[in-house]
Image 1 (tube, rainbow, N blue to C red):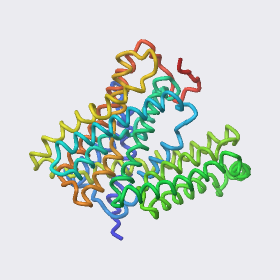
Image 2 (spheres, rainbow, N blue to C red):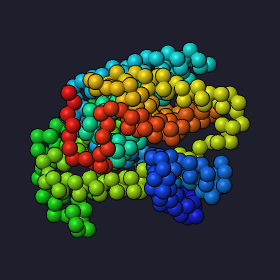
Image 3 (cartoon, helix red, strand yellow):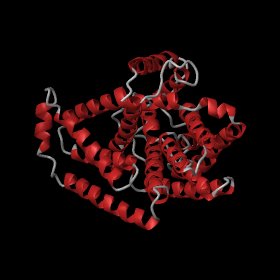
Image 4 (cartoon, rainbow, N blue to C red):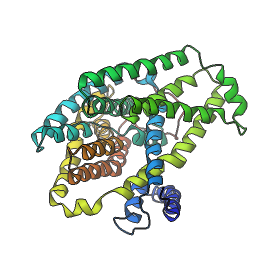
Length: 405
């Protein structure tokens, strides 16, 4: 296996530099951390300076980073909090996005297959990207944050189901049966955890929190790898398994001492956001085909069209989940957060190119649109949210719970 030590060192340096840049520039304007990771990846990658070169090692680490991103998203969602109106309205909005996106994709694409890929890509929301922004702003537990989380949860889970049903290369009937089997296995594991089957492990978790045993961290890896492996074995996209693993592990921690649970969460986030997830976003910039995009006039023309399409196809329907009494600024912020998409777009376009349904120019334009959405939408959405009449500044991870009226 080709291992480029200099490239790994530069990637590690980018991972360190990104939060420092974010902290420095954050004094003037708040920019999501992933912006710096992606931009530095493009700047130092083959497209420009060439200090970092893709390798099998970085590709594998990036895949683990993508899986960990979805694991953390599934682990962080409080389904009890977003259940009811937020989830129902978010689900309705995603169905509208799917109908509009696939229809538009088919109408404006040379083939039906390409249209389906484009349509599904446009229905995604990068929950793993926007949740850290909401958490840092102290918005996770506000009505606005709850609605945005619901939109993001559906915007990640829905496209994963669509990928399995329509883009897996099997018939929809076969894919549905496989999904049902996966849901039964995963649901049974979550049910067993919910009724206390895993509570005997809490004592082991507590006993090894500060030892070399680190049982909780090892259990995370086991749950993640097992469900990702199961999804791959069944022909389902691995991200669905990673997302389900996050949900399962959250249930396993239910009932653990609060201090222990918080410490375990901190350790998991350290592995994810401190190591694996940055590599995914940096590698996205490193492997981005900037030359192919710039050299293709049609792809360049598609880029702004796809950015607008994200706002129309995904953003506008997301506002259906807005809480009662939302201001125009709140709805605009929810539109922008809902239209933020990158990981699913990367996954969908990769499948499209591999199957020959999408050409590389269209794929690059879609990924670039997703990158621009991550660069611009959360920042603008947060600025709009701060203009809302009911916005009050809160510390990151505020403990106070603000219930929806």
